[in-house]
Length: 203
Image (tube, rainbow, N blue to C red):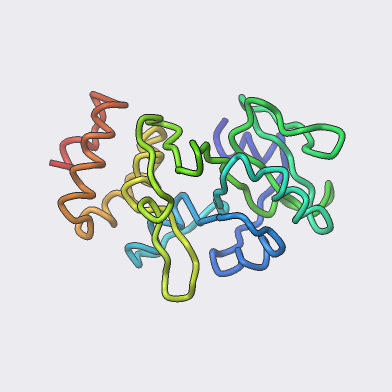
């Protein structure tokens, strides 16, 4: 579905900023970080319009996150283009890879949480499962204490979609990626998308 279809079926979204995330995630003790386009913007400093706020946490912490949010928000499992309430009675859907979060049925969606797999506490790349890392190796912490997904990893996830904003994020990040980040991104994109149009830009 495109953005218009998503809004028609599921309703509108608020667009909080990363600076709002600590208040949104208040009470949750597990690790979490900012992902998606906001993570690229934090790295580059190049501003653009955003459609939502993508946060991320470890999938194993989903129940703890729901409990922490329960007084303020409803959580929904998202899987295969469908949504299901995530409650005490309805556990996280086994195929869910993200949560949509909102105060209630009469309010816009507030933010989404991407559910990241892990192996024995190590972050696992859900696009390239052989790529595992200590969380500090694939995220970075800004001066204000906010943690963001590393730009090359955020861009790899974006490579699947190729929306105008994804191309814009690549162009903003390219001049700032060092050789190691650029090489990693090029090799990962080539493995997942051998004919991807970004490969020429990443040489």
